[in-house]
Length: 437
View 1 (cartoon, one colour):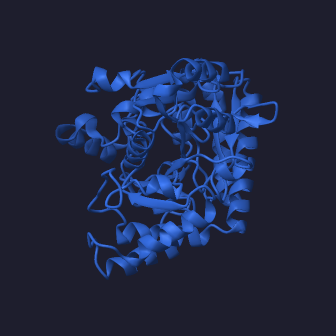
View 2 (cartoon, helix red, strand yellow):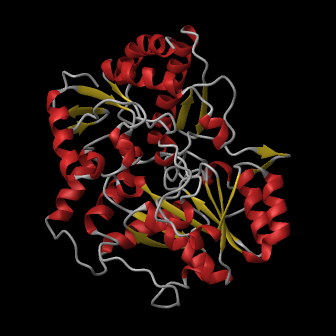
View 3 (cartoon, one colour):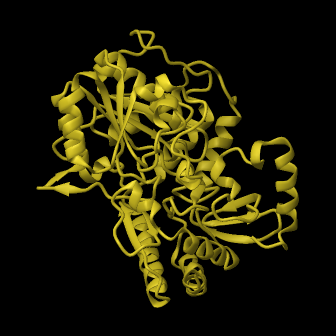
């Protein structure tokens, strides 16, 4: 941002007086790209407006849930109608049943679902179920995969943690860290060796269905077996469970999330969701086999609760979003994503900027390096300074990108050809700025 963004500057100064670092989620502080974050005051379709009256084309989409665009009229109307009947009941309500039915219908391995209020709650609760089901303590995760700010899962996380070069987090106890084993993503030999040595201790392997928090990494295949299927089969052979985190990819990568892309012939035991299922309101969910979900209280011994879980506004927004996600919507998303990738690649190639673009369904990331990114170490080896120059030039050209080199880019059904033309106009100058290292 530039000094002319006076109202955002003033709001950020006020925020820093009353909120840690002036933000309520770390990446919003623009720590890795510098400058003042724009304070947003409104959005419609694919466009954002900030406190200084500046308009941007949005490629963040509230980090995923705005898959139909901002303020999508049917979603807004559904929330307005639900609000007229009450904001929260702390009791069962019809919308939560319908939303669970929608998820179960779309995702084969999910027989039962419990709603919570965030992706972090979802993964935390899924881990608790896995430990109860197996009677074991140890969890295996992969470097660069982010599963929310759960103590046990912050070691070598991606996204905001990658942005700030933090291998973990202060405040996580040594005892908690001892129950987490971190392996390089995609390393089958490391998984096999660990299970051979400590398989009897491991409750679960947890992975992002397609990593999207160190940038998007397509799960690798070997001999026709995808990495996720390999993990499921390896975990089951050791008496452990596989938890597939689809908070970002769920219902965005495809109608059935990333599982719909690589799920034939195998199934995770538990899955976690968020983002799209709430249509922009706070929500999360975890689900899986009925026998595992039956361990939850009150029927079983695993306690999990939440006053706002199944909130009527969030479920109304989620259901209205699902209603708009038909085959035509996914075709539109796919076309917009492909067109944008091609435009970015052309501009960076013309400017001589090393880059690779990697995808997971309609999700994609642009890495500022010439070699494919397969691991967290690869992602960290990209030219983040080039990304910073590119980011600011795109902002000056009226395009709002994720303010970190370690994030996915998000399109919506509102990214029409006319909107994409606005992005195309900003790309050549931004690519030249990226090249000026």
